[in-house]
Image (cartoon, rainbow, N blue to C red; front, side, top):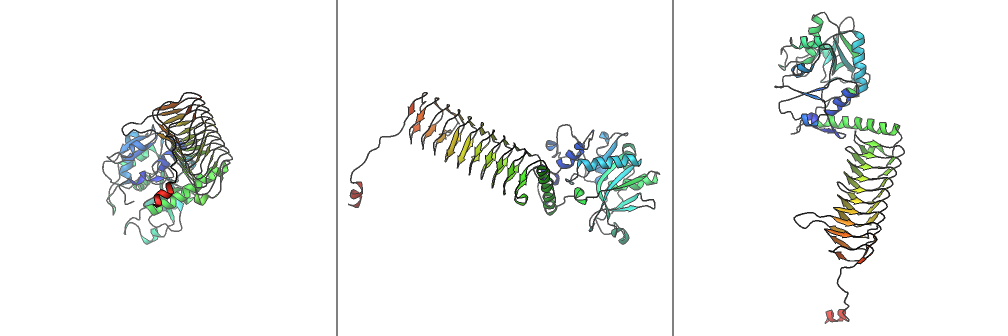
Length: 440
């Protein structure tokens, strides 16, 4: 990957690569999931609760990686081994592999697929009975013969083993290969030599076993993963107007009859309700939207908009912005760490930060909460049914009571009582003949 970030921590549609096969294993019904890491243990903080971590002390090959997890492997269980860089594998595919393995009674089952161009993949060599004889690696020249290189059936790197047989075969591996590593596929001939059967389970869709070794392959896999996500939502009642210009992360949830307009990005763990219209040109990151919300041309990060909220165009909702039902944040409005009451409107050109605004209040154009004094941030409280005029600045901490008003152009530095009018501005002075004096 040519990166300081470990390959399996590179993001794919909102998840690190490693989480994709982990979640697939959980969906397949795995009773235990073990991830093998190196001694730096950089994967540990990214794993779901209950997933176990084993440490491979030296990068000595896939066989050694599995051996590093032996203490977690049960003799009587079916052990499924999946590469951490195969993100498109599905729970359904893993469950089918386990069933095929257990139905066959084999000691090992290799998930295989047939490729038009098998370059770089280990070739599956079958015996006269159609069972797998061995997998021949092709990483370096000399690993395979020309006849073996002509085979198009390849090892996907996904296996099912009988637990006890796997553990015994791992102890017999050696490094007699061009790489000087312990290859997991080398357990297959060991099992054959012990009189056991190795079954081959063909996978019809080769894309689900695609690996990622560089950023070009990551981009190819991302396109396939994104299509899968789009199709999932479309089949569940979501309209995605232009899938080619739309990004939706894997952990996003979207309600029925919601429309995602073009050039919209829905990231992280965003949740969108039913009957919403999102976009065009909108980004939602880790945000929560209720039903009937409209968000054109806007950017939301860790924000909450309850039912029938109206956002934008060109609004920016920052972390902990919380709009209650029927609230509005209009054109060129920025809100952060604030609650906006039910039915309250912040129509345009305003900044509301560190504030609590009550119900059915109208914030005039160009209003500002001056929440930072250079050392600390302070809150502004604006009550219900308040009407603030244009270009009002609230110097926090300050409170405006229910039903109050402010005069246009005011700088409010003191509390305004309920039902009062707060005006804080210099009196206007007109200087006669000013233009003539300037000429002179």
